[in-house]
Image 1 (cartoon, rainbow, N blue to C red):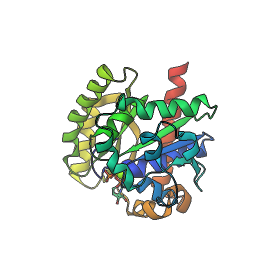
Image 2: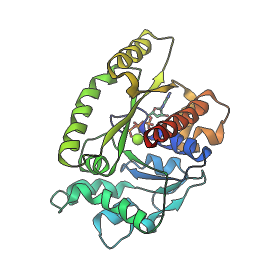
Image 3: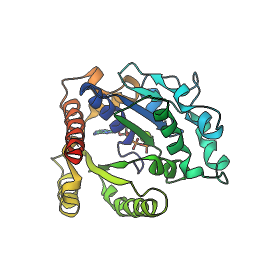
Image 4: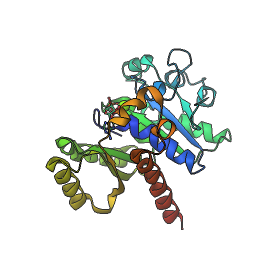
Length: 251
Ligand SMILES: Nc1ncnc2c1ncn2[C@@H]1O[C@H](COP(=O)(O)OP(=O)(O)OP(=O)(O)O)[C@@H](O)[C@H]1O
Ligand SMILES: [Mg+2]
């Protein structure tokens, strides 16, 4: 997930909660030194070892870093120490594959997750490349508030590069229209244009602009504190849509 302040972290945690409601086993990995996902998941980022520990030290197993969040999904937290990863890992052998290898190791140990969600930082640095190398697919939240859509092409180009150089399996899971406000022409235009260009790759679920989501960073997924809210419902619908698409692909 890319682009500053588009709703990546909000989507990561609310989608995780949506999957949990569908009885899926979910691991979220915070790969952003800002640690917003960690804090929103009710975890103190200074109290636990973090994803950085296993990226910098091959002997540290990722499975030992997993914590149960109060919201039914597991989490590997981050904290600010992760910001030094960019500099530290610059020359590391196979650095782009580091996260992929750690996730594979979790699977080899017999810990099975239906979905592993990695929350990325807004920069397209080494950490995000690692995430794209580890991922099967990318969900892009696209803000219908300003012309955030301009960044979409650049990101799709980066994805293509990663596909050809680092991870041929990588595909676009879908584009999620977020912060949609039907009252503004801007939102309607962006949504319409993106659907024209990207067609089926845009999720049917559209996340409306909602101040109720402002509480996610301190109170966790909206499904936990306001389960009847329309946006909670939409994130649950998004989870179902992704599960249904997966089932279609496996048929
Ligand atoms: N649908 C929405 N309606 C209104 N506000 C929203 C919505 N989604 C997210 N926000 C708010 O927008 C801000 C940015 O959201 P979020 O932290 O999820 O973005 P991000 O992409 O993870 O940002 P960053 O790139 O800094 O990691 C937060 O204050 C959040 O509460
Ligand atoms: Mg974020």
